[in-house]
Length: 293
Image (cartoon, rainbow, N blue to C red; front, side, top):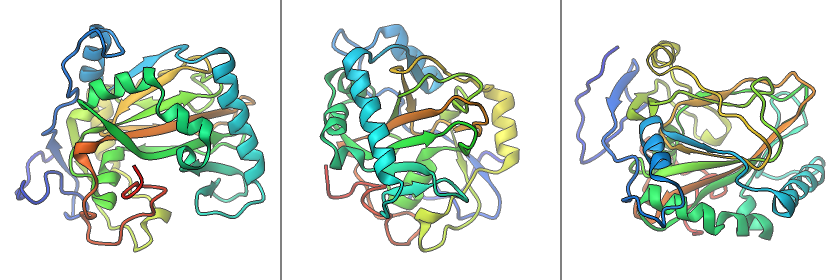
């Protein structure tokens, strides 16, 4: 596997989709930007675990009436979206089932409040080293029997190339709305893979929001050998935080047990989007916030 390229770091620290073959680049950015203290929202051990592995699973983070409110709102949104036509509503591949609903923090007060939850923000601001904003929010639905997979990817590769996110100073917060089991298509992660940027091959079309550029299978195989694959699972209300460059994905769900999650993507205010690095028009605001912070 080739691990070095010639490029101008003043122009693009993480070039991708510009070479005929995949290339590996070492991470050039910190993982945890803030110094740990008693106000960090997590223990020093948890902070160190996140830095080493690129993710942190916090079981039973939400519960009671708070969790129930998120669950009920997500279910109502899914039902209401079945017969609606909107760019923010993504259907299951090859079907009419709702796959994802984007920009939930902009249009629904309960999720707007969730995005600003003090316990979450304490952790986010510790990891990102200061104030942040929502780069993207969504609910992903993976229904029983028919829920489709999410192929392996690093979010940062897409956010960098297609959205113009300059550096690795963002994280995703996944909030489980239903129990996540090892068998109902939970998120899989490759611990430590956040230290390597895998440059992808291929060009997204002009309407890049409709296509997906995936890492090559040889790189994924080598990463899996080096890092292993973990499936952080637990009860509804658990939270999974993971670095923007962590390689992750999920299998399809052929079990009777549905799985749905809220995603809130936080980006540092010091890392706001520039022009897309692949030279095409930016993705829609609901996928990549540029003006609404």
